[in-house]
Length: 123
Image (cartoon, rainbow, N blue to C red; front, side, top):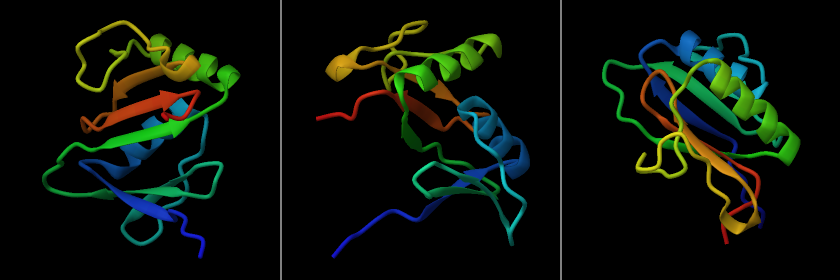
């Protein structure tokens, strides 16, 4: 049996703003609202369905990208003046990591979700 992740709900205070933020950083498109959701679809068909909620409990979301895509995304992070870190605990500000021969960076979205972009999967 093959099991794939199809979608996940991302709680937010403003689903349009948060979906557009992530889509812009990653070079994706925020889709049209569908029911209570604003979807952002990744290349492997998984959607992050942003939904407005009263209280957001931040989560972690990780995206694997190519080296050239990382360069573009990292440039967008810096151009927007976003804080970024080399680690999930935000103890290494202004740095990226080089785990498993790749590169990785963490940044927060408008709702405090801990977003991560990596070029190599973790072993």
